[in-house]
Image (cartoon, rainbow, N blue to C red; front, side, top):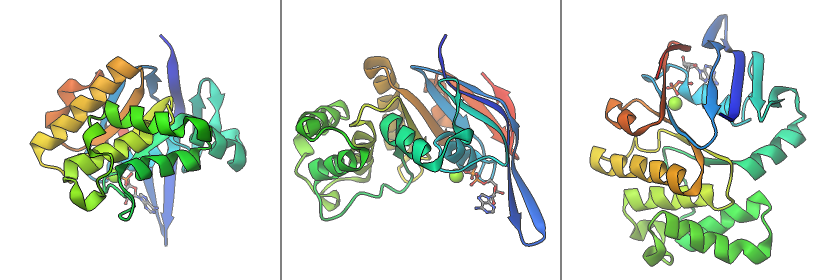
Length: 226
Ligand SMILES: Nc1ncnc2c1ncn2[C@@H]1O[C@H](COP(=O)(O)OP(=O)(O)O)[C@@H](O)[C@H]1O
Ligand SMILES: [Mg+2]
């Protein structure tokens, strides 16, 4: 088994006025490469905080985050940015597509930021839109797409650069259950067919059966894992 991530006693405190919020308390988890993991928990349990730390968008107050056995908390901001651009894709709850750009251009814009070789953009965009089943919608703008289709464009944008891992923070929260399940099944398919590693957060228990690995958070602690 190869672990893409391993955490050692991650804590994250937020100081708010005179109060300290212990958002994460001694988190020790491992994410195996090529698996679909769901991070489950009610609102406020610490899911986003943990995902941001794993993705290098935030630093823990204490503890280590090993990516390929290298502690990213010790890296300079520059090195961590580079690691993120090359290896990590993000999908957020609110889709955040650029409204004046069509599906193709939105995905291409993501590649621009990632530093991928310009000669390969066209093929990379095409491949990733095919992977999410949107090849026939390439030249539709966001307002011409349903919510589920917009989320697929965001997924295509996250996977276009062939990252090692995709983090998806409540990507189904603004979709009805049926469409949400389709997104979750798409993630599973991307893991099985494209060898991606995906970590998704949700508070919806109906999604979790599809995952290879489920980590349950409550009050900043891992309370269950299967
Ligand atoms: N920037 C912040 N400043 C202060 N408190 C925060 C901040 N971000 C998160 N928190 C607190 O940390 C806890 C976990 O939040 P979060 O990770 O967003 O939970 P979830 O994503 O599971 O809903 C909550 O109590 C939240 O209020
Ligand atoms: Mg959250």
